[in-house]
Length: 107
Image 1 (cartoon, rainbow, N blue to C red):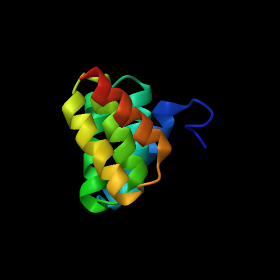
Image 2: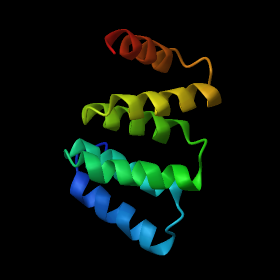
Image 3: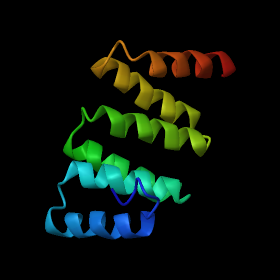
Image 4: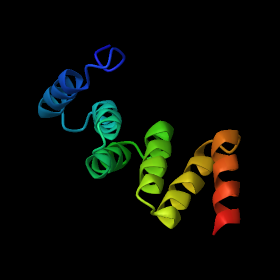
């Protein structure tokens, strides 16, 4: 709720608190990653998306966001690998299919 109202720093404190209680809480890693990315801390966000995926490798939204964050840093081949993993889990994801097609035509 705090993130939805733009109170990102407050939301991040709650996610950090949740992770102190349960470091294997994939959703808290994911949500903290989203908040960090929204504040421009892309590399920190990537670390939390990766941690969420270590806990739950099939966490599709974390994998998509990881791909998007990697792309923002210009790491196209790494982003492509994440998007390919998304399609292994959810082969009908047209958003990711379109992004992969676009990236492959650019490369």
